[in-house]
Image (cartoon, rainbow, N blue to C red):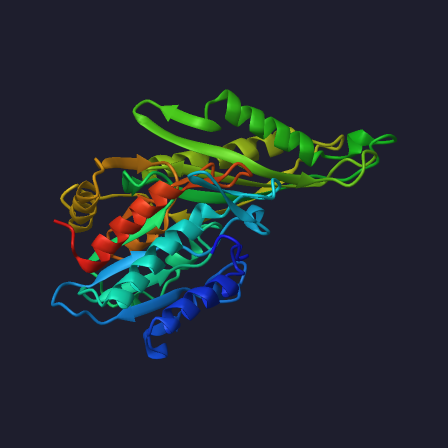
Amino acid sequence: MLAIPGKSGMESKIAEFIVGQLRAAGVPQSAIAYDQAHKKSHVGGEIGNLIVKLPGTTRAPRRLLMGHMDTVPLCVGAQPVRQGRRIVSRDKTTALGGDNRAGAGVVLNAALTILKHKLPHPPLTLFWPVQEEIGLVGARHVAAAKLGGPKLCFNWDGGSPSAVVIGATGGDSLDIRIHGLASHAGAHPEDGISAVAIAGKAVADLTDNGWHGLVRKGKHAGTSNIGFVAGGEATNVVTDLVTLRAEARSHDPQFRAKIVAAYAEAFRRAAKSVTSNSGAAGSVDIDVHHKYESFRLSLDEPSVRSAMSALRACGLEPEPRIINGGLDANWLTAHGLPTVTLGCGQAGIHTVKETLDVDQYLQACRIGLLLATGGEP
């Protein structure tokens, strides 16, 4: 699965592989469905989420196993090879794609093992979301009714198989457009309004006042980052438009809103302070988009208890974690399906140094099979 290209929005080939494996193992076509999540995505996409429902052979609540199919663009062209007990990409210019082909593989392995050996199992929903890497898009727009109302939900993503992620931060994105006024930068720079100058003053304001990077204000904490800046075409023109994209994260929704408000105020203040010779000032447009909300599961949540029991049965001591990233579990939990996230051996994700630990991956597969069959103590 690592060698199959499938960046966000282009998951059709990896989905075809998964479906082909399931069909060869005896899963009827009627049990396999795609939703229309990609039609609600800002990038469109080839396909929606892949959802497979298997009837149970034992009477027990339905369980959901999931792992997103897409990778970051850096993984396209990966050539996976074994180096001892690790898998790496032979091509040193690409990432490996263990994030999240390993997670998707854990779910597929559980299904294929159950089918091959005719293992007893509760009703199962196998869920492979699309477009996780660009904002949890598939999980956000999943047709939740197609999931069958599972009572226990398990997600596989990056990290050690001993990690049990029971909570994650919330995030908002900001699209910022700074409008200045063009003029000849040599002959009459004073007639212009530099959007670059406005951007610089705003960023300096945010940095100096502790609203950029790690943000701590009293007992409240979060993060923010400006990750994209574009504008200008020539050095002899006062730049009249600069576009920035930023994000704000915090486990506290109200504090996250304060970070966003600080951004808006800093850019508007900067826009007013940069004027032309005639006294005209710049302006700014800011669009805020909610990406995902924070969540935190109790250790008594049934999915958490089952996951921790499965880890212990496999000889691991569970390590409950609250993380500062977003997960498909954010949106599953928001849809009323509390979801715990487990790791499967990926390290160095989103970089050309990404690796997949074979022993940890196989451990994750054993955990996945236990949870799929309801065999955890």
